[in-house]
Length: 493
Ligand SMILES: NC(=O)C1=CN([C@@H]2O[C@H](COP(=O)(O)OP(=O)(O)OC[C@H]3O[C@@H](n4cnc5c(N)ncnc54)[C@H](OP(=O)(O)O)[C@@H]3O)[C@@H](O)[C@H]2O)C=CC1
Ligand SMILES: O=C1O[C@H](COP(=O)(O)O)[C@@H](O)[C@H](O)[C@H]1O
Image (cartoon, rainbow, N blue to C red; front, top):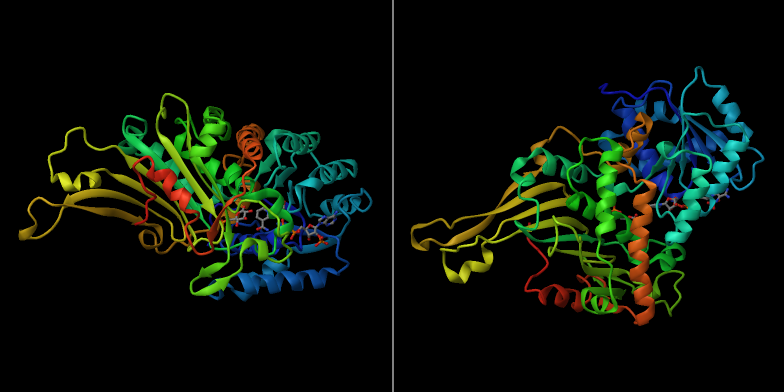
């Protein structure tokens, strides 16, 4: 089926044998190819330092695809067509020798086409790669570069990395990935908020009492101790994914759908995030670290017993917090954020709690029920539910209220369309040259500024993280944190 095919484009993939490439990028490219969204002439050059031949490389990618792509959509003709697009170049990314082979690969294309460079490598070598590409004459005025998160470790290191990329590429050709922006429901947030007057007119502190954002992961460290222990959940998940979700909920309507119009509004939200004081850190923020426990009936080790662990580590694997966007739209509306590893299930959802009616006429015992909630579910299934109150059915119930969802489950509502993985959408947008799902430099830097002051506050307090058993919803203190405001984390759907 042919949709809106991209122009002939070449993709140079650095880190072509790494975890991200094998697990996410080839499957995403395969699906684009299968759906007719890769142009006939599109080519992919895999770059890595392993000394293997092109045929071995193609074999590795074929195996990865057989493992990762659902059998029902793994069509052998498509698979071989996709594999036929792949070439391999052994290269040490840190030195300029060998880069001219990229220029030669481009020159061997049957026609002139733009190149996208994807850096699926640690951010510490982004600068080297950009400079070497430039010095070897492999770039032109249309080349785009895609970079992965995390961009640095704090504001200062992110500036260094952004400066290094920016010394070669202008901002208009830099695509900073936050894969949460590629998720179907996240995009739907924009449609929901700005296409539906029903919500658009209610979206402020007069009508909304509070907002919850939960990103619970069932996985632990997945063999990434070296990276994760230096980062922690705040840098790994909050500074980027949760703040992006918060921005999409809190931003003012952009004047159009242009990348900069949207990103300007997100930046205003990041600037308006209230900084923490020592008092609010103690009261409104909970850091946790998992200890041994069980998930789905299977025992799992604690964080300090994970492979490669340093047993003194105080790195947090869980964070919950209450924050606020200090502006006219949101003044006084708490945003409760929570994310952690080794939680009972994989669950990402946003819950908008609307205020109660000013005058209440039903059973006083049911008063706490009497508000609407909008539940935006990102994972595992994607959908939107609006919880409304109706009369409980039956002759014997009198005027009893019953909360129930008006439910839009995307899999059921649109059964014929497969919900694409975030990386499919993001790769497609890069190839089309559209930046609105990518993060601009100032967004990254304002997010770091906010995260840095919280991390500095933690360091000053010098407190160990609170323990929580793997398979639980985090430290008990994270429940107490929201209960102190007379609220609770939303559990139903
Ligand atoms: N994996 C994931 O799920 C996610 C990853 N990311 C980001 O994506 C990027 C890639 O991550 P990931 O795939 O996990 O990392 P990996 O370490 O699995 O892959 C990186 C690849 O780059 C290669 N490489 C590193 N330095 C050089 C060099 N100087 N010359 C040649 N090759 C080099 C490595 O080669 P070798 O194997 O020989 O060392 C490896 O194959 C990182 O920035 C990460 O933060 C972001 C979100 C999720
Ligand atoms: O960026 C990251 O995201 C994953 C979670 O992504 P999801 O799409 O599965 O929700 C997280 O596990 C990882 O630590 C982090 O680096």
